[in-house]
Length: 126
Image (cartoon, rainbow, N blue to C red; front, side, top):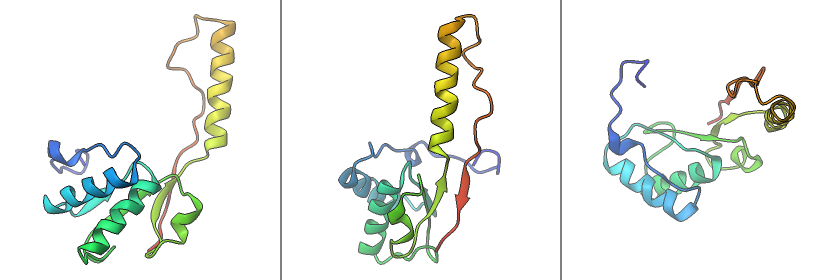
């Protein structure tokens, strides 16, 4: 948001703790604050936000944007289907494992060196 020249209000960054009920409650609070988009840390919390939006009869994407993270299988089956961020968890785990092995073999390897981390992919749905 900063790169787009938009202000980030402190109340807009909230914790859902990856829990359905808490994420739904937080979504209600965000909606009341007048946000125009919600980016959830995972698809489960995005689904909880979707439920809050439906309760308030707020349409996605016509009235508010909603994006999850993980691209879990059910994201494509939700109504509306969920736009989400997909990342290759297997490639991430492979890179992390290689890093841990290299670090164990040579503690002098910089902690910031991970190699090529795969880029996430935005999966645009409804």
